[in-house]
Image 1 (cartoon, helix red, strand yellow):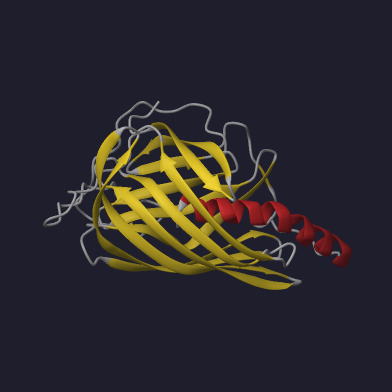
Image 2: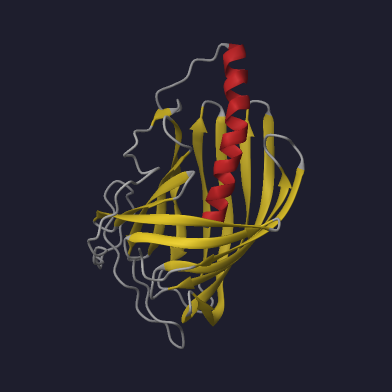
Length: 276
């Protein structure tokens, strides 16, 4: 799941959750503890006011499948004729330039070390808890929205963002869902493949990257119905930095709140490889 996909989910939740809440109130449907809006404190991962300066945890040689106690990730072995082995991203703030519908904006991603291979990645409208394991980088859960109205998605199963070790032809599947609020379910299904290696110039430096092609769907389900968007992305991932440094994504399909057709292409490029 790329950052752009998570941004898409955050926008959809912001617009569609009001519809779900109104419908639930009209029907007299009580909320549950698991699905109710979270009272997200200002120190929760959604804002991440402070950034740890400790180095990322070293990797355990034994992969884990439990999200509750993941093993720290090890640097993946270097693939033949490729950019090299993957290391977890360093804690700190990374700035990205985004271009969508002719509009250019800048977004900051703040990475906080949680120990044991766990990190928090936070932007303006969402944050994710991730785990670096010896077999890949996983997204465990995501929080969308701003305090005090935040909504948590506990992905089931965990989202495999990158399968390690990366190499030419490496492929993987991500198929998972979560309930963001009463009656509002998100399903994400994608197939990814490393199509090659490419040196790109970003942030004033030449960076060796793996090029990852992903195609999939993002489905939103509410009591009023469902809508599915098709996603295609090309991502340049730097194993040396543990970061996506450049990406292009296209989203096609109906907007979950309005039903209007969406056909948008957006690009994203990192502006600093050394964290602030």
